[in-house]
Amino acid sequence: MASLLCPGERLVRSLSGGDLDHVSFGTNLGYWPWGETMERWRREAGQPDLDLARQFGYEAGFAAPAVEYGVWPHFEELTLESTDEHVVTRDWRGITMRNRHDRSSMPEFLDYPVKDANDWDQLKSQRLRLEDADRRVTQDWAQWRARVAQTGEAVQVGSYPWGVFGTLRDLMGVEALLIGFYSEPDLIHDMMDHLTTLWLALYERVARHVPIDHVHIWEDMSGRQGSLISPAMVESFMMPCYDRIHAFARGHGVRVMSVDTDGDCSELVPIMKQHGISMFFPFEVQAGNDVEQYRQRYPDLGIMCGLDKRALAGARADIDQEMARAERMVRQGRYVPGFDHLIPPDVPWDNMCYAVQELRRVCRAG
Image 1 (cartoon, rainbow, N blue to C red):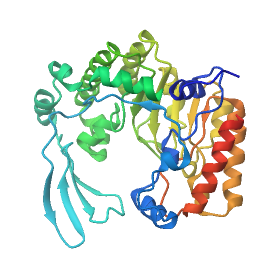
Image 2: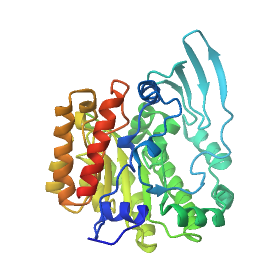
Image 3: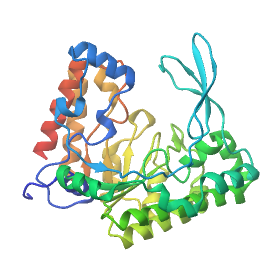
């Protein structure tokens, strides 16, 4: 048992191994709600200004300094059409989408900034310029160092929505991207390579000022059927980029290198683990993921989340079943418990309070 650790160090050790005072609590997306869920909880709790971190005592964990990883300058945000039910907008990434005014469902994606190699060349030369790397890091470093000293957070580079596959999906749309692997492989390679070069330049600039604890890659490249591209394509298109990121991580003493992907990630874990990834989340249960099976197969893998969020809408016995799973996982180490994605609006406030109370107990016991 370690002496009292700061929250960031506790989280790093919870995922990568090492002595712990207790397992990190409340530091992942498995504790956070959809917007509609939060509205429900505010009503049911009778707290219009409900703050979950303060209410439940969530611990600080990873924090990311201010860095522009994507298109920059941003596209102008525009409202293109509005009806009684829907609004069509273009966001700062250049994505045009139709959304309900109440934001109660997934948007319908209508258009993307990259349709061909000419669009990519224009975007690369105007909004993804390598020579702008210094200006993309806008953090006040004296302020940042003071913050981290006060909160004990660990430093993360990379964040949602930036990933070797994930960012291309946002630039092209998933259908065009999947076709592009066959029809325009040189374009896909160039996009992945250029973005990786840009990100590494930005990581290096952060590393000049503060030690980096965590490199995060957001991919979201799986469905219930598994990876959206074949393992062979993952290896040939993406893993050269991962190797470069892993080389940076090794060279700077980074202890956690993670991937976030929804869906069934069973095809991705063994490949990406061979190329430096040490932690995955969120392990969606309804997509067939079982974190205990992953632990058995990969004893040294950092695992976050993986508890079935659907249990939160059921009886306490359903929640207790997930807590028992969490206890077994915590005893084996390198696991931070949480539910397997954002909490949906069918979850009552009382159930969430009970689940978080039990998760706190599990983390403290571990």
